[in-house]
Length: 311
Ligand code: CDT
Image (cartoon, rainbow, N blue to C red; front, side, top):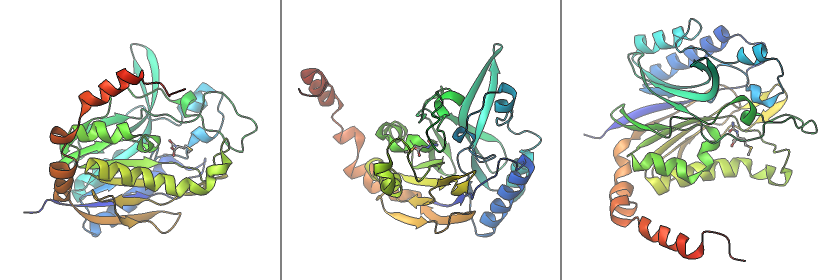
């Protein structure tokens, strides 16, 4: 029996600064209903899906900053998502800004959770690769302050047995790093879920602006192929508070092929019936890690060269 999992990548259009959580959650619930009506078992929302992507502007006031974060999940505002998932029997992955207090110390993370069809939380991931900077860049048309507003995630990359397969999560910039997929795949990940907020302009490096879509897809396609897994990438797209972001939400097969892709910069469902057994030709043959990886040689080479670039 093939292991089929129908997944919706729930691309989000822009969310304004003023939009309430209740309005956003109502929008996500609509997408969830539409996905279920089209036979989806799992819907994947984007990075920081509940608000505008506030890392794009400078916030001094601590209370103002905290207001962008969730202190609990579910919360009164997000409970409708969990209730609707249970009612419909659909799982979901949700990115959000997490504020937690441990031993009296405040911590802020860029987080995602994987939620089962009964509304229970299967697992949590806190973003490890935070792009941008921690100081103000007044000459930039918008900021990239993730290094200021979030701590590096402390939960590692983890994969869970869920939805009939092995599922891992990462968030946005993580998708550009080979280690992300490899650490997940070493745990057997068959599906990698991720959301992203990716501007189509890089103020520090405008010379590569025209490659934004290409590098986004290249990273996910390479990650999928080299690790024999499905990758589901979900955008917050369009012009949000003056920042123009790419769309290109995509579902990528373990072959590295894009099998479904968004065609707008607004709310849009990208749906594909994923056969999880399509990971096998890659995981069992070409990229059978146990058989073909030569980790001891990589270390040997690194030792011989001192792992520094040749002069
Ligand atoms: N949210 C996030 O991680 N965004 C970054 C922007 C970097 S600009 C190349 C990303 O990697 O898409």
